[in-house]
Amino acid sequence: MTIVTLTANTALDQTVFIDSFTPNLTIRARETVLSMAGKPTDASYILGQMGVSSRAMGFVAGVTGETIKNMLATVGVQADFVRASGQSRINTVIIAEADDTHTTITTTSLRVLPEHIDQLRERYAQALDYASCVIMGGSLPTTMSPDFYTEFIRVANENGVPTILDVESENLRAGLKSRPTFIKPNEHELAEFTGQRVDSLETAYAAGQQILKEFGTSSVITLGGRGALAILPDRAYYVPSIPVEVVSPAGAGDAVLAGLALAIERDEAVEEGLRYGIAMASAVVMQPGTAVLDPADARRFMAQVELEPYSP
Image (cartoon, rainbow, N blue to C red; front, side, top):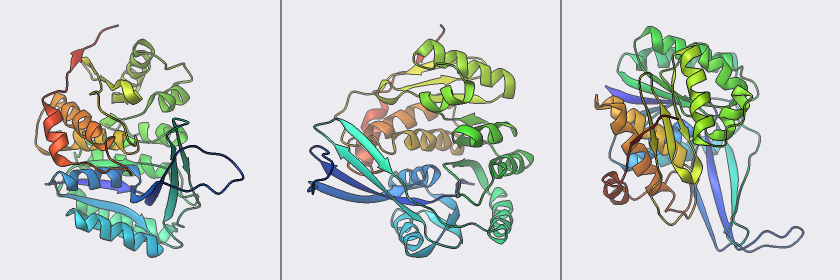
């Protein structure tokens, strides 16, 4: 059995570290890092650095797509992408330390045609025969419908394969129609979906309970530097973040996806998945770039993760 990740809109992140951002001037970067992007693909990359194999699926295109596949191969990930038209995108991430800002500029993405989706359907059906779980998420290319998530979660359900979904807005609505096992929204995504304020543990818990009652789906809500809140069918946990020096927050939420999947792969309780996820997320934020970590840091942090039973 293996973890499968499904990313329709694969990408790379070019992270630029500057002191401060001033318009209309030439700004010299102190450091630049090229790294993986695309939430599920990030999870595969994180797992690979931890020595855990996975199968990364979805779409890639152009020279950037080849770079993505090569980067995944360096950490032992099986890249099984359908080649689409156009070019996989490169995002520019600007981290201005003096301003304490983190800005991402995205570009137009690859072009996925109906025949490309048909090819993915065929490969996906085969992959589910050996899948312990599927992580899917991220934005969709402009040529694709949110129904993509409805269909691919439904097919996983029909094969008895747990799913972990990390999307926003209309993609979240479409995915929840098929009742994924877990969703992993952040506060802003959850507020947009529910139409309610989500700015505290109490309001996050209420929103997670609403989703649980309506769809039967558990939520692991990431709270930025404050950690995460997990709402499960019969219990809830607040998991505080581990105090570390944050270099770049990019990819921390994707580490939580990886942690949940790892626990499913090992047939362990959700609690272990939360520990894996927060430990790996803490290691990720200490590194420049996206979804990069030192495995030794992640293993060291495992003993420091605290799960606090939560009830409002």
